[in-house]
Each structure stands twice: as structure tokens, then as C-alpha cells.
Length: 244
Ligand SMILES: [Zn+2]
Image (tube, rainbow, N blue to C red):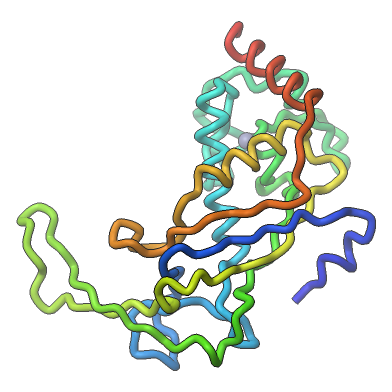
């Protein structure tokens, strides 16, 4: 694994801690050492993990909702051609000062929405870098838990025949904690900090089977702070969005 600390010695990391209120089922299908149809994800050392890619995807989704709510023009992920700077078929006033970006390779002026400025797109590197969140509990203390389920036919409101499946989850109600770090690059947009913090508050559960009580968690985010100046900047941005 790349040691992000070695790459970012001058950047103080943000410490993310997730405490599970129930059990977690962030699944990978078809693992060889389990009878489950969908198993939990572990790293090479056998620790349960919440993958960085999954966390980043959820945060991006929440930030997109927030940005649209605040009337920021936002492109459409995850297809490259509908994302910045191409935005094929996407309407909106993207050519604004706070979206301006000079591409250092082509030396051309481009416009990237607030979400792409935070999370990146095929032509702009992400300005926030996540590590996997790793469960602190030793793997040998965590027995495998299989949870049976059955596929429901929503139209006929009955259980489908021959559709019994098994999910592997972490043990229930152990208040397991997962920790990891995240880094913001020096050119990370200030107001993005408000977006990230708010997005964490909106993620109350992760993984599948949330409605059957899996994946509910509480976050603690250290070293990600905002101040009055950043809120002023956001306010100015929103005023501009509304007046356009
Ligand atoms: Zn964009």
C-alpha cells in the first residue's frame, strides 16, 4: 500500500473514525474462503475495512446533493463525457471565476465545478485523498457472521423461490471502530471543507441492507476545521448562484 504520510509530510492528515452502531455489510461477491454470497471486505492482514473508494463515492454523492441544493452548477458523474470540463448535454453557468482552472499541460483555460474541484474527474486529479478505514479490532476476535436473506419480489410482494442468499457481516453491536486518514492537497478549495464536513453528517449508514439494520454508524472527524472566512466565501458563492 502507498504510504500517504510519506508523500504528504507537510500536510497534517484529517483523522476519520467511524463507530458502528450495528453490523457492517460492505460486500465483495464471491470471496473464496466464505460460504456467503456477499462477504465483508478485508485487507491483506485480515482486518475488516471500509474501502477508501466506497467512502469517497458516498461523500461525492452527498456533496453533489448539497451543491445542487445551494444552486451551484454541477456536472454529471460518473461518465467522463458528462463531467467537467466536457459536460456534454449539461446546462448551467459553469464559466465563472471560482470554477476557472488553467490546465498546466495544455495551458488552456478550463472550468471545473465545485464537486470536480474537490473529488476530481478524468482530467483533474482529486484534491482529497482517502485511505481505507481499518477496523482496530484484531481479526481473530471477530468471528464470521452469516446472515440469511431472501430476495423479495416487490411487484408481487412475495419472497422469490430459490432466492435464498447469505450475507457475511461484521459481528452485531460490538461498537467496532474503523479509523483512517485523509489528506487535502494545498490547492483544495476552502469551501470544500464545509461540503465534506456536512456530507459526513449526512452519511448515517454505509454498505448494503441498510433497511434491515446493517451499516449504521457515527463519525468523528478530527483536524478538519472551518472558520468565519470560509463561511463568508460560501455565502458569497451561494448569493452569486441565486442571482444568476
Ligand atoms: Zn464537475
